[in-house]
Length: 275
Image (tube, rainbow, N blue to C red; front, side, top):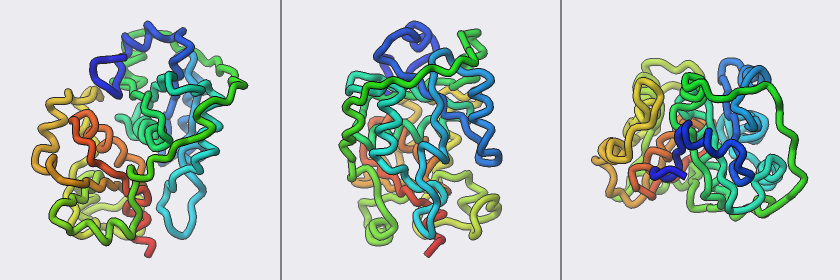
C-alpha cells in the first residue's frame, strides 16, 4: 500500500490491477441525478472495478427520521462486499469517485464501521486515472461466489453517534461538533436540499471540500493536521453534514491527520430537523 495509510496513488493501483487481494469499487454518484453514476460506470470505469450505488447499496431506505441517507443494513452490505471479492481481512478495497471523495469516503467509512480496516481511497479519483491514460473498460466483472469474513461484520458502534448522544454531549467542553457543509449552508444563507436552513447550535464549520486541493488531490497529512489544529485535542469530535455522506470526507481527513476521535452523526442535519 502507500506510505499514507488509507490512500493509494493511481500509479500504485495500476501496478496492482491484477492482484486478487485488491478489490476496486467505483462509487460515482450524483445527488441531482441518482442514475448518473451507474450510467457512467456502464460506459467506462477502471478495469476490474465493481459499482456500489449510494442510494441502493451504501444507504437504507429513507424513513421519518434518520436523515436522507440512513446507514445501510450491515449484513446486507457485507454480503454485497463478499460478492465482489472482499472475502478476508487481507483484501484491500480501493474506492474512487469523481466528486472529491464525497462517495468514496462513504464506502471507506462504512467498511471500517463493519470492522474492515483494509480500505483506501484513490488519490485524485477517476479524473486522475483518466488523465494518466490508465486502462478503462466497459466490461463489468462477474460476482465471486465465496462468502468470507465480511458476511460476519464486526460493527464498530463507537464510530457513530445518534441524535440523543449529540444533544446530550455536544456542549461539553471536551466535545466538538463539526458541520462539514459549505459555509453558505452552515450559515443558512443558502439551502438547496433540506427543508430548513441553518446548523446545529454550537457547531463549528469545516467544509469537506477543503480536504483536497484544487486539482482534487488530498492534502498531505501535515496539511490535514494543520487544518484541525484548533480542535485536535478534543476528546470527541462529532462530524455531520446534510445526510451523513460528505461528513465522511472530514472523517478521512481526521484519520490522515492522525486524529482518531472523530465520530459520525449518521443522520446529520436532515435527521436533526426531522424532529
